[in-house]
Image (tube, rainbow over the protein chains, first blue to last red):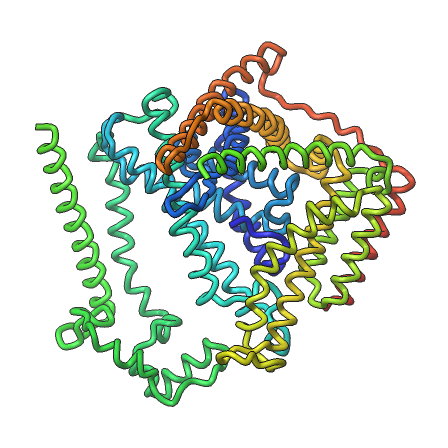
Length: 351
Length: 271
C-alpha cells in the first residue's frame, strides 16, 4: 500500500499533498501545546513502534504471513490527531530513509494510511465500543474491526488513486502515462490482498495489542465511563438539522441530473441526452438506454421518486422539504429502535 | 515452517540495520554529492524526482537514470550494492505490476498470443516500460539523497528550508528510537527462538508474534516516560533548538545551476 514514486501523476501527488496539509497543520496545532510534556517522546516512540511493527511477519491461516501497519492501535491509544502524526512520521522515515514509498507520493500515502486510516480506526472503535465497560469483550472486537476497517479503507483509497491514472493521464495513442490499470482492475487487485491477508493481520495485531494493554496497562487506553449527554449539548445539532432541512429546496437550482445518476428515460429525450453529453466530454451516447440499465432500473420503484410523489405533490420545493423530513424521521426512528434494542440486550446481560 | 516466520522477521531487522549502517558509512564518504550542502542536495535531487514524474518520454527518463548512475559513481557509491538494494528491488516490484499491462491495456496489436484472445499491444508495452523506467529513475535519485546525506544533516536541511521545528525534532527522535526498538525486538525474537523446541501451530505462532508486539508496545510506552524524564533532567523546558550552520561553498554555487538546468531540460524534453 506504500505507493512508490512514478505511479501517480504529479497533479495527483500535488492534490494529495494539498489534501493532507490541512490535517497535518491542524494535528500539529492540536498537539503542539502538549509536545513540551510527555506527549512529544510518546508520539515519537509510537511512530518508531509503528515502523517496527510493520516488520513483524504475522503467520496467517493458509500458510502465508502478513504485516500490520499499526494505525488501529495508534488511533485507539493516542487518539486520531496524534496517531495521524505518528503514522505520518513513520511513513516519512520509511520514504526518506528506507525508500519504502515515494517522496512525491508521500502526501498520498499519508492521506490514505495516516489521516484516513487513523480517523477510520478511531471512528469504528469509538462507535462499536461506545458505552462498553473497560473489561468488556466488545472493546477487543471493536479494536479488531477498527484495524480491519481502517487498513481496507486506506487500501481502497490507494486503489482509487491508482485506478484514476489511466483515465486522466494518457498520451495521444491512449497509452497510460502512470499506473496503467483502470478502476475495474485496480480496486479488485488491491482489495483482494487487503480484505484477506493484510486486513486480517491488522485486525489480529490490533486486537492482540489492545487486549494486552487492557489487561496490563489500562491507564494507557484512557477508557472513559459511559458518557451522559446533557440535553442542551444536542440543541446545536437540532438547530443545524432544522436549517439543513429548510435549505433542501436548494437542490432544485441545479439543472439536469447529477453525473452518473441518469435514469433509463434520460437517454430517450433530446434535452437530457444533450445534457449528459455536455457533462461527459462530448462522449458519443448509445442510441438508447443501455440494456442492463433499462432492465435493472425497473427492479425497485421508490415510494417518493425524484423527492416527491408527482400525483400528490405539485410543488417541487415542498416535495424536497417533505422528502428531507421523511428521510430524517426514518433515520431517527431507526436509530431510536437500535438504541432501545441495544439497551435491552445490555440489561438482559447484566441481569 | 514453525520458526521461519521468526527467521524472516529477524532477517528483515538485520537488513534494515545493515542498510542503515551502509548508508551512514557512505554518507560520510568523500564524493561529489557528499561534498554538497545538504539543502542544495535535498532541493536539487527532489526537483529531479519531480521532473521524473513530469517526464513522459522513456528516452528522457533513461538519460536521467544515466545521470543518476554518473552521480553515484562520482559519489563513490558501489554500483553493485546500489543494484542489489535499489534497482533489483524496484524492478522486481514494478515488473510484477507493469507486466500484465502489456496484455491488458487496449491498443494497436503487436503480437497475438496463440492461446485465447490475448495480445501484446503497443500502448501496453509503452505504458509498462514507461512505468518501470520512471520508478527506477525516481528510486535511484531518492536513494542518492539518503546514501550521501547523514540523517541528522537531512533533518537540519529540512528545518533550514522551513519545516516546523517540532516536526524535525520528532522525526529525529522517531529515527533514533526505531533503531533502539528494532534492536530490542531483535533481542526478544532471538531469545525466544533460542528457547523454542518443537513446532508451533498457527494459533501459537500468531500468539507469539502478538505477545512480542505487546511487550514491545509496553516497553515503548514506558520508554516514552523515561525519555521525557531524561530530557527534563538535562534542562529541556519545551523549546527545541537545532543548529543550522550550513554555508554554501564553491561547489554548491556550481551545483545549483547544474540541478536547475537538468530539471528544466528534463521538463522540456520530456513533454
